[in-house]
Length: 213
Image (cartoon, rainbow, N blue to C red; front, side, top):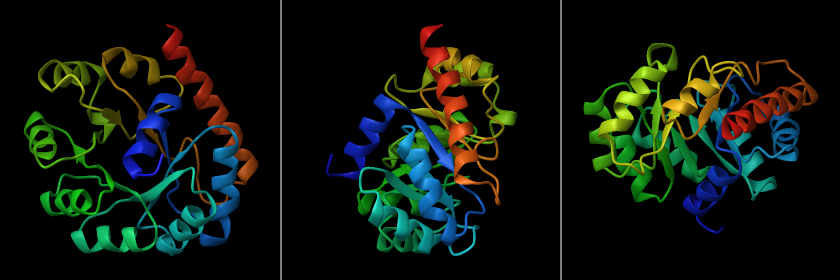
């Protein structure tokens, strides 16, 4: 597992859940990341509108090489370069921006742009996006996921993000989602590492239930 894409593939096979740590402070970064890794979460995203996000990413990436750590809310090619310089290997965006995807691909990073429509989805895939963040999932129902799955290449990775809870994962999974991004249901600022681990375990149980169903 040397490249970001190798790590990503392994994580998808083990537990395809991305922990979105919006608002995380650098002093919290390592304890929270260690708590997630301790229960099996290896995909960790710090949105760039968090306090000193690059410092948090650098700390986690250096201390936890088995995890795939990166940034969310990446809106420009220069931010992609900043994430890469900090040791981040994952770039997630709320939107599809061609320059962001191109730069992430150029640097060999895992890239998950946000899309809502088939037009955006095909454009992102054509530029080499690793997978597609379906955002906001509150507006992209399981029925929409099923419709997109019917027209996109079979191997396309679809990850709903936004409003995902332990109660609605199964419906998305049945519609063709292959993973999820989990934000405030996993972590909110001020939460202890123990609290985060407990929330993470609930999502592991819910995801395991979708596999068995």
